[in-house]
Length: 261
Image 1 (cartoon, rainbow, N blue to C red):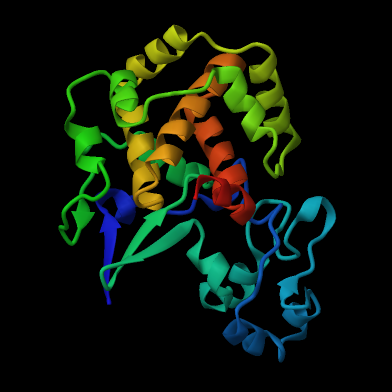
Image 2: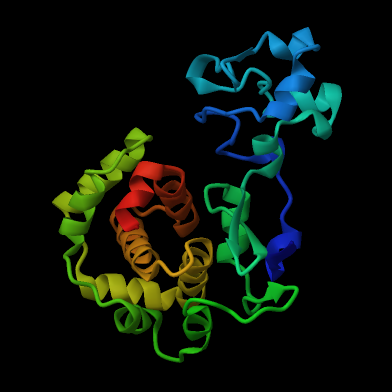
């Protein structure tokens, strides 16, 4: 099966201990059968495994995550000892037309920085036609806020959108506070449009990311961009941070994604 990736994919490299939001805490990791088979004869690893997952420690930290942010399993046994999820993160895969489309998820801060700040045209490697409005998002000369309205007109208010997201499954208390603040003090639509237009390139990159990761789900791509812009304005947080939080809260919850389906 042919594997297709975005042009920027090869630039990604985990920043390990320099990461402010480690992927080695806050997640329950399901270990694949082949890795479980390898681990069963290594007491140093198997003692930290129960019911097919790592036994998380205080603050839901992986038992192999050292205080300096490095992975004890990698340092002791090498990267090949990692289970599939740990090897793969933050990568995702979609399958279309007998081909595998891979990408990087925004929940990883380094991937988020790479994707949002990419200055080159979004292209696929090996070359493929760009699906699902991606070429439109790149080539339309109108401001990104007008582009959004053309693709998927906004039919709810900022406060209503925040209220909808407050009904979702939520992981981080900070995300809840950001949504509540936005609901109580909504952003004027003209302010939101000006904010996106001022940061046109990065918001186009954000929309393209969602269109690529969730093929055909135009509603999710447009709704996410609008919510992220409004929270950035309301909170004063950086686009990278709010995009990362959105991805963690929405894209890694089957329950939340079902809403958009």
